Image (cartoon, rainbow, N blue to C red):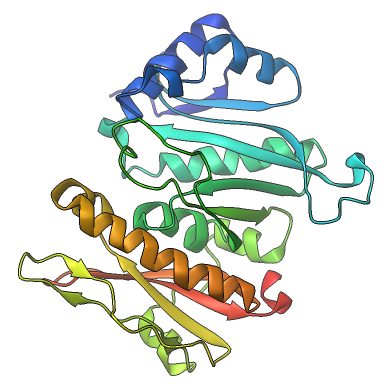
Length: 293
């Protein structure tokens, strides 16, 4: 029987060489987007957090971040605005769906808590339901910031040809909200719970003749305390089969989230409906700062 996968800090040039190689597998197609090992080593030795998931001595997942400052109150001194900027997390394709992403983020949280920092932020593509399920639903992250073209034109195989719009996740790692989700104490909620609580569906999708979901032609204006925004269940499949439709989805989501965040809504949860010909995914929007707890 093989040993269980372990998570430990990456601290040596050999570790970083494995991390470079893993990046090429997770994000293929653009050598210029690879974070070089010498930079990761400098981050690891200079207050950053670089952690790896190892199957024996083989690196199969990693997460990397560095200290930064929160810009929400720029008049405050930097030491009062410290946060951890989580730059990258990747898991080898052969090791996905084993909970490694969750374990890496939990280990990252523990390291950052030991530093006395309470906020971790990172960006991700808001149309990726797999990432949303981890970042928002499982980890308890929040989002109220939509960044257009966060990285400009990207050339790797996962992003080429599409605007690099991103959510910025706020992960308030010492809150009861986050702790309860990490410990699995939060009750399981599904779409029916949100609808029974009065959540407004803003953009119900339809299936095209090709079996791919189409964005709603009309988007309801938000008028309730809770609202549901639908995204594709499998955006990578849309991107693979119809790049024009993938762009249409990008602009559709951009309009909805920019308006919702401007109106004071936050992304606070995520849910998917699996099975059947029309699998669906929804973000839950909640109004007001009270959603931060």
